[in-house]
Every structure is written in structure tokens, then in C-alpha cells.
Length: 106
Image (cartoon, rainbow, N blue to C red; front, side, top):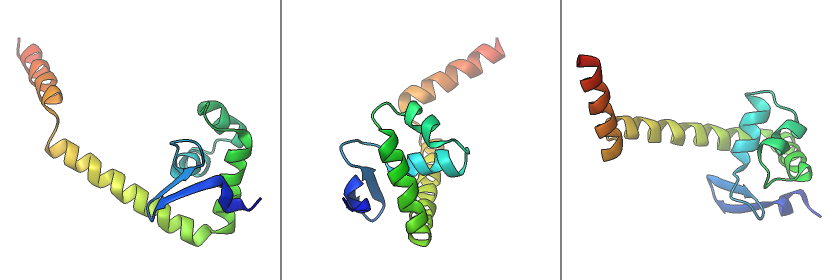
């Protein structure tokens, strides 16, 4: 089996573990930024096997420069989405914020 066979390459910024909806960025952020072990990551995501987690980490180290670019794009997308949601929150969020303001004023 080739390492790439563990993944679904859905687009330039969408690589998921085959048979799941989990993006490789989820595993890699936990591994690289939180310092979680492969076993801890597999326990956090019941749809993933330990083999899939190790395959993702191995894929990262085998393609570090390319995957780092992918991860940077994921971070940028998340930041844009966060800013957009802050500027244009859903109606339910607006109502909750208004309620919080009224409670503080009372």
C-alpha cells in the first residue's frame, strides 16, 4: 500500500483521511501544536485508527515542505472565517450578545 492511499485528495486545500471526514490538518495540529502522541490523537477521534494517525504523521515528514504550505493555507482560511463570523455573526449569536448586554445593564 502506498502512503497516499490513506488519504482522499479532494482539493488543493482539502486532504482527508480515507473513509472519514477528518482533515489531515486536524491530526497534524494536534501532533505539531499540542504535542499529542499518536495514541492520544487516535483516542480523541474515534473514527480514526492508530494506523491512520501514524500514516498522517509519516506523510507529513515525507512531504514536510508541501504539507507545511497546506497547513499554512488551512490556518489562513480558519482566520478569515473567524474574522468574517465576528464581523457578521449569525442572528442567534446577535440575540445572545444583546441578551448579555441587557443583563449586564440590569
